[in-house]
Image (tube, rainbow, N blue to C red; front, side, top):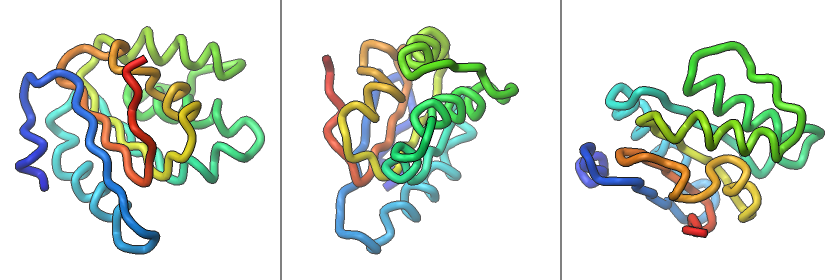
Length: 137
């Protein structure tokens, strides 16, 4: 599967992995992430999004984790989801990053964590698994 990713100047690339529970989607995505992460300026593997999203401040914690992972800095002080969305849009648009989102089951999760394709510069990869379609709007 890694050769299919074709690391290079290709624009924003999204890869979805779908399947029944327990077939190894997370294991495959983690292996891909570990193999190709060094080709990017930053990366984040956000696991169990559906589970974390439902907890108090889960949305904000996921946004903070994404920023911390990509920029290797202390946690960003995000007060609310809208503020986090704006901060992610501003900071990620100028970086070549690899983002893996595990267990996305709602469109608002995608919007809060990676907005839409227009947020990103070329050479961005977003691997979604157990997920919804990444919307262009």
